[in-house]
Length: 263
Image (cartoon, rainbow, N blue to C red; front, side):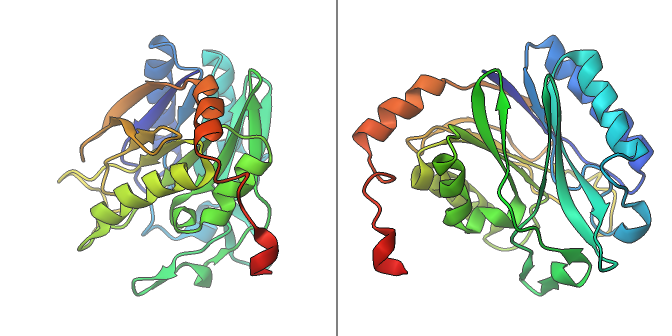
């Protein structure tokens, strides 16, 4: 399966960002991608007031993404914000196109490094997997990468890969942590891990960077197969689904778990 990771920079205007998604999806489709993955906060970058831009999954922004997916015969995965019942928003991944219609609300909120995402964002509670042409893929968002349980849940649900969308904050050691954590989660669950971040050039729209780039695709054996630098760029990768079975036969971390010990 050919996937595309769209390492771009989104700004505060959802309509302008939708046009970016249209442009990058077409580029990916022209290159043969079946799945096109965009970063967290593709609808509107962090630093934007989220409640005023949040829309339901049947709203005009999500419908715009659906139209793009239909027009290009792809599955598009993009980060958006949806209203939550308590007045906050949900940090949502929309996956749509080619028979796929699903969403995932970020479970682990970024209350770390001096930031408190939970002040404005309500947590999700349910892992999500999608099926694309018979291949099952899990969905995850940014800070989720620090929690192995979610990725193992994807594997337990039959996923051979996880699509991770991020807006990874810059700072000392953060690049090394990003690269290490993505590889570790691939190994934990013996899945393909396709991680796309917002880019981080000098043209960053907001006052602070909302991404560091360095998107990467990691194999189920933990080796980096494709990677980018910091600038906006499209990454194309072909996932060998059968490799997951081979790796799981050699490295039986899922089969050798003893969850009863830790209950």
